[in-house]
Amino acid sequence: MCGRFAQGDMDAIYSKYRVKVPAKLKKQIRERYNIAPAQPVPVINRTKTNENKLEIMKWGLIPSWAKDPNIGYKMINARSETVDKKPSFKSSLKSRRCIVPATGFYEWKKSNSHKIPHYIHLKDEKVFSLAGLYDTWKDKGGKTMTTFTVLTTEPNKLVEPIHNRMPVILEKDEEEPWLDKKVNETGALLEMLDPYPESRMSEHTVSTAVNVTKTEGKQLIRPLNKLL
Image (cartoon, rainbow, N blue to C red; front, side):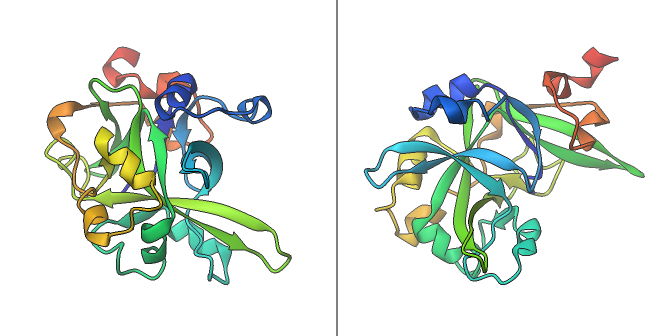
């Protein structure tokens, strides 16, 4: 599962994905260290001319055919093992893929009667790409909402002691085909959805302050032993 993540360096995100963000939109965006489901999130999509663009989407995919938008609360993640079979996701896998930029994500490890939050990130990459899918839903009044989900896979050896799932992190050479709408061969897409190498990742425990979704700030990702 991936239920919380960070976008801690927006300038690095703009640079990595080569996106030009209008000044008006930039004013709406800030560094975040506790992004939670149902919140608006900057996501990387493709224009009709095949250029990267930054778009704000709500976390929790609502299929275009859904009658109740509250289904999005159950659709924050999509299992890579079944994504090509589930009605909610298989169409998006073919033609509505996106990248969710992240500087790190959180998973909680069960310990007796409580859970301990861990912050997980890459060792040598400030920003990395979570594989996402999106869809556009229209209400009875004609108002549209674009929403997304984060794909998950089996955990690698670093994440496994903490949680039984982890988000799909794309390799650099997978980012281009993942966004390219001309790429629609299911087998090739599914091959990208494997666990990221644990040797290139790092993790540490953090304060339980991250448990409260309204809490924000860079202090949330600091190692717990440096806060005590």
